Image (cartoon, rainbow, N blue to C red; front, side, top):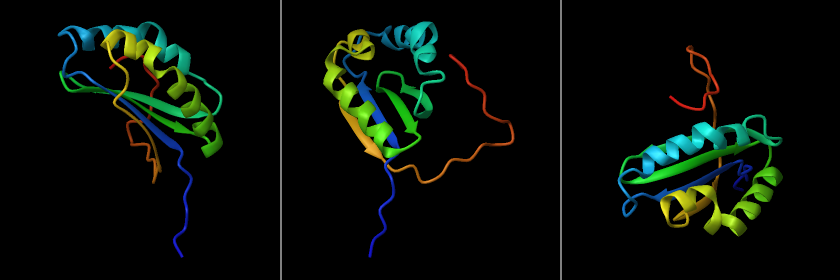
Length: 118
């Protein structure tokens, strides 16, 4: 019998393929100026990372304390995805909103530091 594991992760991805050239710079500024602060210390959220590949995609990766927290966030986000700040900056809604299983998390020897920019 297959054991079920909680889906604590959520990936939200936007395409940057047709976005203006300066879009990733604008997204970086948005994360530094307001998005990071919004998620820092958010109840139910273990951590969030913002990832990107210039000209390809921009993504939020979330890990929640439990599946119920993830489901509630996903429901709220999906409802408002078309008007989310990332959608407004990019000019289109996410191409992917996908829950996932978090298999493991390891903190490296350099430690973990919360930062609004790298």
